[in-house]
Length: 50
Length: 405
Image (cartoon, rainbow over all chains, first blue to last red; front, side, top):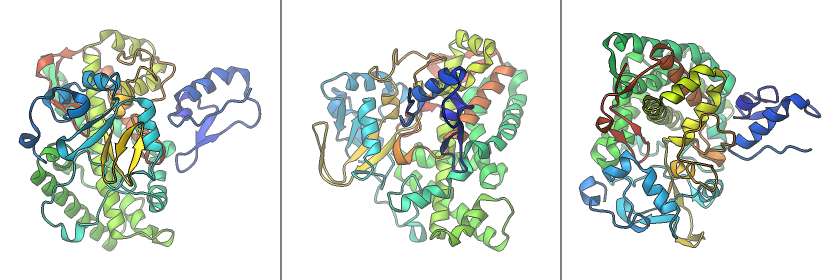
């Protein structure tokens, strides 16, 4: 789900498990998408550190 | 307690006597689910159909899904199996990984996940689009069609047959077998038994064929050849094929059908999707939330108390994902379809270790089926809203759904 909501931030490995594509701080223009991914993660697995 | 007649009769209080095959509940389960959810007893219990619990709040459904050691998947069908007949060589064939518990669950799931990763299912997009266009070609000149039987029902069976490498010409037979197991068979043990036998006999023959004539880039061949990494048996491969057919067809078909049924009555949503194609991913999730097709079961491993309910070892719990997805504690205006809904942590695909392995393929099929329909048939409406028929129990969705355009 996260890779649909924020494809610049999340990808998936060969098992379809989510991976984070960006190392370090997220650019400001991706904040909204990252938040949307968080709000839609069915496993509540995304933590955004501010 | 396995037939409609034995379980019929009026339901006075759904919190103590719900009937998942009551015709009104099958047609529109949401008012009853809401009544239970907002009652003093949001985890209902009924003695019908062999007895089962029905949690209706989002938080409870998710909590049970996460506690897979107590709430096991040793049976996932919403009604008990009848004692009908002996299946001989197939007696132990289940539907891994959905019917597996840890520790085997791990490798049962590990082997099928790569098939359904987003990058792996992307290769079915054009195939799916072609299937959808071919189906519409057959009826577009008529100005009317059955969005259920002529379209929704026809799409997933073809995609799954392609994925499994089995003959597309058998689509109607596959559909009939799957309905026999998941729909008609749930209230008719003889049909369920015979349909299961047909599925397993068919795949047993496919397994024998692949052993003699291994194929390149073929799911069944690849599964049979995975024995170097995991203790793969014929029974496991047969079980996976069984699952992909049974779980991959009726479910997605129902989601496509419900979505078309919704769009037929909501021209403003059709217009919204036309005006804003970027909305598709969010819209698909919202339609999955509002019309979640699937209810799975869990079996209680040992006596336990959950939210004040005394659950006994062997009790059946119906994971009412459709009820959870309309819980106002989790979703604002839960009965409204809001195509650009911001917060949507829906559980249409379940939650925890048994979360649907095929969700990426299901999403792709649902999106493409709706996109192609709206491209070619932008305006349409129901011929007779009261004439739409529904299936329910394990998988909820329209069956006959005539539209005009």
